[in-house]
Image 1 (tube, rainbow, N blue to C red):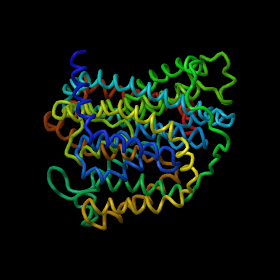
Image 2 (cartoon, rainbow, N blue to C red):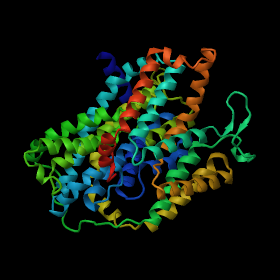
Image 3 (cartoon, helix red, strand yellow):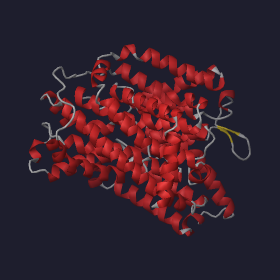
Image 4 (tube, helix red, strand yellow):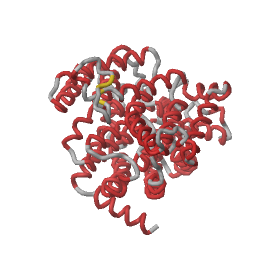
Length: 501
């Protein structure tokens, strides 16, 4: 306990510097903005801002990017409640009853409960990360090359199981990402692989190019092809701060949602997305009037929003302690860390304690900022919701191109990102999810590296992945999860969960 308090003290000393408070505020503000504006989202925004992080110190860069991620979860609730457009899959459940409350003149109450629930969940998640950080890191230090390979295989299997839509398409995206990571010079021999004689592919595909193309440009193409219809609530927002009675009625839902989200957020393969759905199902099951759900029940907003924010923050645990990104945003965070020369994994907490604990402390500060940003400025967010997307995308395109060119001063990077954008758009049209592609790309090189190291240590014997108890256990979990996922009853339940996401 004393060690945790000391580490949190170190974290707050780092996070409360004027520079890092500013980066935290900028991240939260941008996150809220992209969460409020339908059709932007944290994945596209972080991919666009990756070049900017080159000019920042590692701690400030990660604090800002983390603020964008959990800030977008806050902002997404505003869009879901006022416009009935869930910008993120995690906001689908909030839109069901939140928009119905808004149409009854209770938009302010729904927004207030979402903000307070998210703050409570964020505070709890910060404590969980601080408590589990050191034990998870010590566990990570027990991992050798074989164990790391098996851990990443298990993570990719969970990414397949928890991806939207077809399992076959998710597997195809994972494999495509791994293959793209192999483009360029071989890490040991230096021979070119899959470059097709193109000079611009000699050094491989930059993660920033792939991320900004597939998620940034791809998102622009998608929104231009399918502009959303905004059912913006025209009536009064109503009071924003819940009464004591409202808090008493919803506190149970907030605490249950926080616990569910915190647990599911740690799961590799984007388990955090299940948090709001699981919370909604639990509240409906516990309610004395389950038939009212879908007509504007406040617990159906408070619980899922708490689960949403708690899961967003605890998803940093596998990233920072084991180096395993559980979702597309965390894959982008891996890219940001590698740009800064930091290898995510168990060594981070020992080699960069200021970065690790400063990031954790900044999450609590950011959650406090978000309550201040979201509720008093609700009038501004309502005005921004009226801005048509056709006025936003030219600025986004210009910012993307400038950022890409600034990385290496090569126009080929911009052209490659444009081509990746068309790929991202095609994937969307064909109903392929792009998130597994990013996870496969990020983990592809690490998979190859750990595979080679394990085989070198074992003189080329593949049995090394089975003879190690921890490696065999991780592979068994992955195999069991994949086997369960293909069972007809499980697949049906899975499709019902994701049908609206």
